[in-house]
Amino acid sequence: MNPSPEAIPTGAAAAKEGAALDLADVRKAYGAREALRGVTLAVRRGEFVALLGPNGAGKSTLFQLLTGLFNADSGRLAVCGHDIRKAPVAALAHLGVVFQQSTLDLDLGVAANLSFHAALHGLGGARARDRVADALARLGLTERARDPVRELSGGNRRKVELARALVHEPAVLLMDEATVGLDPASRRQLLDEVLALRARGVAVLWATHLVDEAEAADRVIVLHRGQILAEGRPQELAERAGTATLADAFLQMTGGSERSD
Amino acid sequence: MRLSHAWFALQAITGREIAKFVRQGGRFASALVRPLLWLVVFAAGFQNVFGVSIIPPYDTYIPYQVYIVPGLLGMVLLFNGMQSSLAMVYDREMGMMRLLLTAPLPRWYLLFAKLLAGTLLSVLQAYVFLVIAWLFGVEVPWMGWLTALPVIVLAGMMLGALGLLLSVQVRQLENFAGTMNFVIFPMFFVSPALYPLWKLEESGAAIVHAVAQWNPFTHAVEAIRFALYGQLAASSLAIVVGCLAVFFTLAVRGYDPQRGMLRRAGGKPA
Image (cartoon, rainbow over all chains, first blue to last red; front, side, top):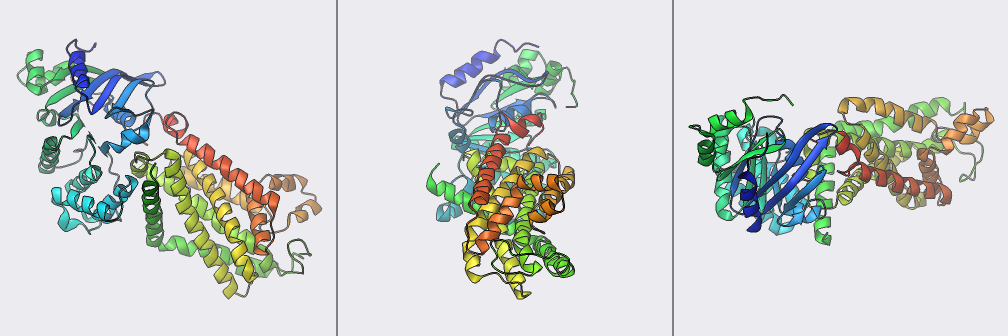
């Protein structure tokens, strides 16, 4: 139940190097239910960290705190050194988010959805047009720029959301179970797109309950019942657990128990 | 908050509201047909039942159709204010609200931009209704079209802010119809929209009369009525502005992550 002793030093080391995303002892309870019980983690620039946990582990709660939708009961959350509670506007400016639930306006065109987002981030005129065009080009969506989102496949809609999250060139990208509902090919494609962002120095926190996605990560953080159980490179975690694969290690750690909430 | 940032965001939010409104042709039609039915059918049937004596701001006997124009303008603003809040609830269920609330702008400003966008639609509809009323031969002084504008804007904002506040309380779309019945109809009927309040007093409905005095919609209608005739209903206008401030402040509190609806939603994605 307790976080493994190795977990904290790794996070602290990342923090020292000026982590893009930095969480220290974050706690959150809903009434009697403790959703997060002291979570400490950090993500460096150019690092892809998978937040691996079964359903109900507290991943969604963590993302709600990170996006300023709720406040933590205690602890500190900082994006590029900006405390999400004390300086939410500065923190949010450095944050790109792809939510689990789609937040596209289906009746608007692809580019129009991105322009709306650009404006909310203070980009207008030619600058916004350039950024939107770049973001669409990067994800191979230029041809679809004028199509209403409604006409796009699930995989392409997710790509539009990724493009949108990158329009304002955030330092930190949050992906909240972004591949839910996608077919394997689209899933892989989205993951590859995000992995490629490392080269541009983007810090990525990728929440998932799928072990194969976590295997691609630089570092895996296993979250279970609101606590970090383990943290390290995928292979490391398997070695430490004495299992052949990360999947086995994950099952062993979380007891294979999934809670319905 | 840079000024250009605030401006781009306001433009985008307003643009989206207008685009949505244009797509929903039926909404525009029903927004106009509703008051028009009252004006053409109800007023025609009732004009001899109600004898409207000379009361300020009117300086002569007026037909009943002329009397109810300010009330129907108020109705247009009231319905659109509630429609906008319905859109907020819908956006929250669809997740669009999350996108908006994670924009790097102060939350009060995002809500204010929403309020302004909704008010813009309210005011446009109010003036289209005035044009239609004029086509039906129900006239208000031409100067009134101008002098009423600031009051219509403020009343529209006040009722929009009330809608925002309701959107904090109403968490599910399916509860919305009920709320409408409990808000729109009492507000509309217990007000001077359809008959002067002294009629209530005269007929001994003292309680209803007293309640009407506490109804913000009453003051919205009266402020518009006087403004249409180039007069200032100072106390009514002050009450409208006061209610706007109170409703908006409470709505902003409601959308605060530390208090309000998000907290009460208990961990469900907003």
